[in-house]
Length: 253
Image (cartoon, rainbow, N blue to C red; front, side, top):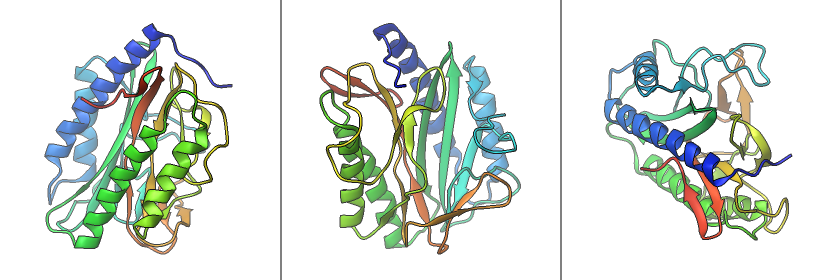
């Protein structure tokens, strides 16, 4: 069932979104060659708790047999999402995706970005640009009166027009008191299908885009998702409220 949020609930989710946005901005500044993924995670958890919030991802189990052990996911190069932070050092030429969520006053904020480290090739830069643009193409369709797959279609059209592939095994989602609520939001498909978008819906829209084919596989750690063909992948996400006047991005400063 899709949960419609009240104006007061969306106000709290905006607070959660701003906390998420501020911390992700600090993490973005800290990304550099030689920094370990674990250092970024420890930094994130410290900042989350300093804000008085709780890490949304830490201990999350979802469909996995194992709880997620960290406060952020750090996915490098061919890792699409859910990379577990640890001892890996970032290198010039890598691209790295950071996904983070917080729990604040009973509600969730969830956002992600991908950054290039040092010198990366033109095709990798284009992948990041196109994925970010696809996110905003999808957000533009998050309007009352549209159908859910209007978002999906807008994302897919922009990605494929630019020669990349949309991941099909992973989706965006509704968000509120829980990180994952209905509806699921694919990043592909024809427009005009799915639930009618209504004022008060809150959606986590998150294109995951591969340089090569769209297929992915799950690693034995029960979390990390990688591209099947080992091509690199990018991921951007915002939490978005549907309002009478169009989409409102809750995780953007």
